[in-house]
Image: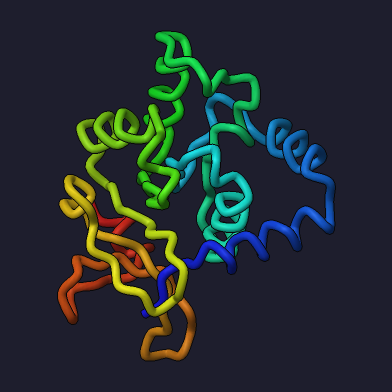
Length: 185
């Protein structure tokens, strides 16, 4: 089992940015987005973790999942202001997503939006999990306060030797592949 490290995700984002400019990535993501598009994952995060989140998004996409990130797909949203209009757009986007991943980092604590997004999605769909962003891949994760109510995501090899995303409840043997969890009713 390996959790996602901030340094690994930053490096992944940097390699993507080296291949394209950050601005070009934003423009391409915005062009590919349509209001009717459905996603596998709504990735809730602190904008202060933008480089880490870009790396996490690409990692999740490498596993074959589509990922919604607000500042990439809806760059016109005002993240500094909580408004009914912004909330309405985010509700619409969350309704178009099959699951919700909460990127838990030290910056997440100061986010105005993340607790609201978590509550909305949990009430709407219930397919919620936490993605711990840690300093070392073998760190353990114990969710703080209400985050401990939800399973967490990590990556590990299966018996076939391939790397998969896993949903874990924190007990040995209590995990399942993310794709299986996502497909379950």
